Image 1 (cartoon, rainbow, N blue to C red):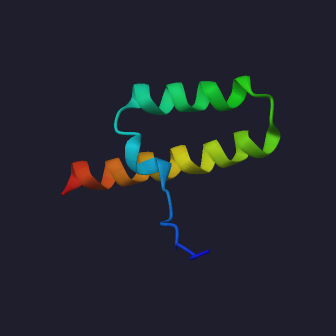
Image 2: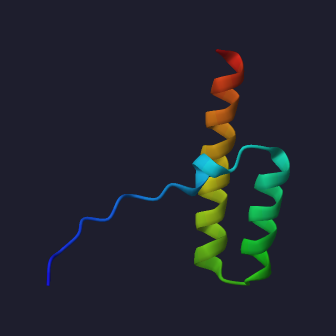
Length: 57
């Protein structure tokens, strides 16, 4: 069996609009999973910061 290296997946790259972020957060909070909610907040913050930087350039 060969080992394949998996690429890192960054969901923040796919959250392009405020609506995307809101939907992502809603799904996370509906799960009632505290770890998932904390992770979603981090991802949403990263997405928001990335898009804020793109708008200023």
